[in-house]
Length: 266
Image: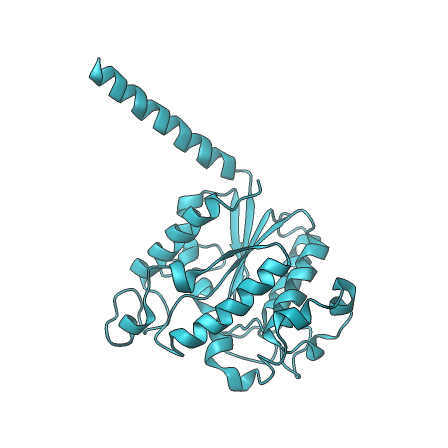
């Protein structure tokens, strides 16, 4: 009797697991971000990137990355609309908003299905290279969200130069182009440089912006498993204190997939 009960429980667990996986099989997922997403590859198949392990655990219909190494959330006074420039380093135009425009262009050309879920993991370079984004903290989320959506999107990109306004600018554009898509913001993980305090400050702004827009936020800097201070001298989950190795990427990818289960609107 006990054996039959045990086998029955296993069958139920297996059935529920299959149902969960099947529920994701119709979702088209797009990832935007910086180097720790970029190293997973455009098709999310490189084991040093969290995207590979997220894709493995979450099992969506498609999972495509538009991330670029060196990207920031924050625009600067020299930033221009540019979907053609390719760079794996910090540049004026290597920003999340241009990734959003590349995604929009790809869907219009039929190269990418309409996304159901768009996840954005960025902020590391904003914290690390503040001198290249001098207006980073020039506006608070409260100041940014006192304006209407139309007012924000009507601005040219080179006038959107604070982190808070840049986050809203990109997310409002996504909502305009893909009104049915769910947006999830992921704060950067802890890294050896520029230190935990700087990463937390960036994460706090991203989270507050997410709350203003009723978007889900995953705080990888607080809830993730990688400790930046330890990675400075001991390369446990990173190759250089900043970029994940396969083990660190797997932890991040599985963690994000597990967190997402309770946030999904689908």
